[in-house]
Image 1 (cartoon, rainbow, N blue to C red):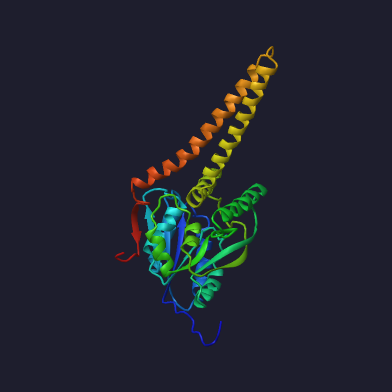
Image 2: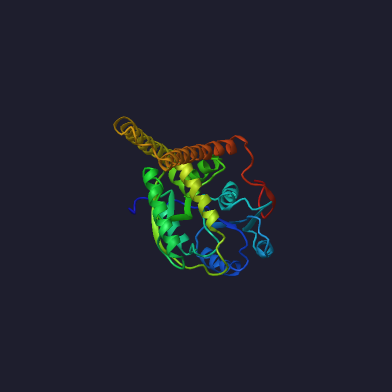
Length: 320
């Protein structure tokens, strides 16, 4: 950065962390956060969003918030999902810049200072890009590799590869995100869509410190579906391609049937081939209807205008 350009000031830094049954890792997270936050040259607040935990997470956070008023808690009425929990925190974060991160310490808190440095140099969004993923199965690594590259291709390069929700965002970015109230949320894609100046910092993602991941295969598939259907019409294109392939197959089989009828009148068309043809066409129709139904279902969810989350109680929050 040129010495003639002053650093962008930061009056308040907000950190948003969703919590779902993370009592095992919270003591270590507290140690790491307090160590990092003590080195920052600005005011700060940490917003923990308890996303319907049934373990001791809320009790541990409540005790911490009683000792430190800058620790704020938003307790949701049930589990609404990680993306909704992040949204609840973003809605109430007051900082000039906001950092979103997971609680499992796979998002290293020490990277916050580096993110802040890049923000002060003029960057509005700083996201952490994983170079390595320790402690994960080959299946998860392979599917994540394919998914992010496919999604980046379909989003015209907007969504960066190998990134999660660990990022710093400026206040204008957060304000725009808070105006985007779609139910099926994919915040890492939404923040990329907003624009502004963005950059990546790389890190090696460590293994989970304590507890187990809360992202089951079902939840990962749901998040992937939200990403694909929200930022791409690829499923519709695939259904169109499938329909064209089946149509061409049907035309070829029709030509074959006509040849059999007029050139080889004594040949009776086979029952097996007929059943196969009907099965292929029927399956293609059902696939296409399913894809269309997925989009219609999401439209139905949006037009109901239900709240994205419900707050049961909160601690140390202001009037907002």
